[in-house]
Image (cartoon, rainbow, N blue to C red; front, side, top):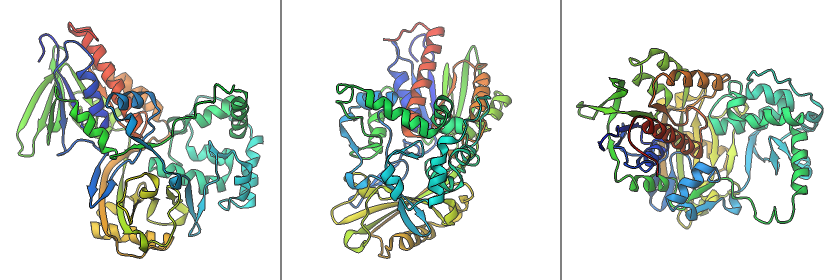
Length: 486
């Protein structure tokens, strides 16, 4: 331990934990001793990139919003920013499965409202009645600002109608959050929709106001095109993890170290107990601890330290998912794989939630003469898929592709990735629960949480969460030790 500087323990080696460790290890002079404890035998958490027979397979997230400031700053420092790929031209656009057929989403969706009249008029995703009901959104009065949360389903049905909810909002939200929109908190998942209603009176009105604002901008203002929305490193998402790990030379990274308890160490410190695969226990004393693990796991770790804090952490439910990656010979795939893939509404009654056409979405995901697809299974009400063997999960995914895309060939590659209790459910009242959690954490200076269970599920949000946690830790260290930020 650096003289007079308390050590820091980061629990969890996912993207949030690695970001926190990186920021803390470089954030002060002298630098504190930082230890990362990861229960698994690898770093990265839900980010898992594999190179198999020329295929670049993503077991978890395949992209991120790199334009968000914390992610942009990190990728620049890691010298990855210049290696980010935009979506291929052929991989732009998404479809929705409706009645067994793929229906492309209308172009120019803005807050679930199509901004291009021609595309909206031509779409076969909605019936004439559904289109009229969506257009009627312009006249739907705004719900008063009473400070209460509501579900995404409630908001969508109220403003857009049942049909648009079932055929557009539900599959999109389920694909993003692996959750039931009837339970999802609007304030925690899509607050911009409620903000648009309150500021402009509705979503169509907000879209029209934005169009007027864009038209009023000068030529200089619009000279530079906006950055691509979703991007991916050339070498896959694992490239970010590898770059972070390579810059943690001063950090003690321990794999196979499962934390069992975080206890009060006295004198403003914490005792972190961990066990390795052989059952040997290690106890570390730290001036600050970052819990960058699912909140349910964090709850178990602090149960003895503070039962009320543990209860607050346990308030977020999690669901499980499965990703099945399948590679095929191009000449055995009759369907033109244009777009990024398709989403499956719950009303279709299928096992799959979505299918991503990976080799159409980003370059370099499959060797010449091959295509790569990913089928997403599981989620709320479908977690039973985890009980099935890999062979059956591959069979389920193949049936999906055969029924929808007509692909009946034998795959040249198959990989199954199981993710147990990894997708936090931001149910109604999520932000109120976070406020209560913050109050409990305030009683434990130096104890910080980070990750997808709090303020965003995406990779960019987790990077931001790790950066924020690091800032909190550094502020704490400045208050109790002779350090300064460079």
